[in-house]
Length: 82
Image (cartoon, rainbow, N blue to C red):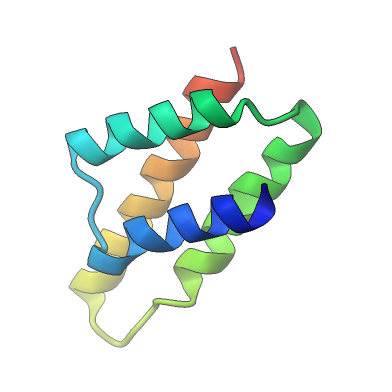
């Protein structure tokens, strides 16, 4: 499960932007994954860890990257913390 989550996150960080369609795909992925509650903290931390690997000197790219991290964490919270 860990590798599957990390590879999914990396897919979304490749372009540095998460649109509405990708957000819906992520929500579907999380619903299908149905992670146990004790894994949610790791999933949020992993989003930040993997996202920070892509930080550069480009301010605009970094802002977009942080928005993508925020969208992933938001998807985790709204999908898995019901």
